[in-house]
Image (cartoon, rainbow, N blue to C red; front, side, top):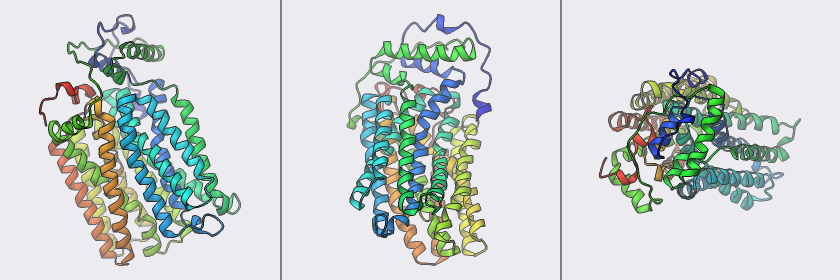
Length: 498
């Protein structure tokens, strides 16, 4: 991604810093942001905001890795049901957080919310480290989920509104794929911290949660220097603030990269409007952009089921069918995480070059075919634990890019006034359905101890992602390299479009 992001820009014309656009409209702002060459400022924004997915991966994997430890009488003495319930509460908190903080992000601004949600996460996960019993632990997991869910809505909105259109696809995919960096960190930290020679099971799990909180606190300090979205400011009538922030961004980029390209001309004018009501949001989703909503829902549901089906039954399959010892399961996370990280990084640029619809269909289709083939090999009993993990790694090389493209799709095909809320709604529906149904279904399939039953579940996941990919190919939006305002104009200009 580095080479592509840092590629030379067209020969610069006179420096626009000395000749700013005569009027501030959303399209002026968009073109000024989109023509900026990639710079250290963009890297700072991506690293500061993209940590949300790393933290989620860390949390999910850490809890999964220490679940057995929390059942010990010298820790929290949880039952298996309580361990599972804490995971459901975390997921429920994420859904509620996405909806609540997503609405607030559209109303109060991106920056306020991406600072607030990270602070909520930091406090809650630190408190988790001091849990004396299940009730306190469960409450902390729910509040941690609130922060993470709010992160998704605020972060994806802010990143899309600050990153140039020509690289928005690859940047968004790379950030969403960083979940698996967090997953690898969670697996590694659990192996290290729970080792008797380090902290051991009794204190190691507490240290793990505390480390996550320290990482979040560090990111809060970095995020303070990320500006509010000029697009959001302008839409809310704060023209002078939007101009001042954009002038400062341009000055910093120009100091590093030299004179900037001239701003492409625009004659369009758009009016400011208040934050839309929920009735207006639903009207856009169900009437004005019903085809886009159907595609977004299909992509989010399919990827949520696909991921949760495999990831939450990962340890069960390895231990029940391949005899892997419980304390060694974390080792098999690393190849799985590697495939998930490399997929968005290597395939991400193609989403900007080849196009959204083609690449979404291709990655969803290959992920589905790969999982179906893995299911056939699983039934034939021709795999061992290592080759099974390797097959999953290859499948999720494509599935990770596909899942990341679902979040990208939702974040760029709806109007700015409701962007965070749209992300929150589709995240909540997709995660709620896939997050609850898939683990329960596959837990029952694995419990049956019949390979053919588990493979049937893999087949269902494969069909879902293939169908979603075909829907995207037919009804998706060619959003590559286009300003967000061109993809989804202001809600004032919508008139029954689908």
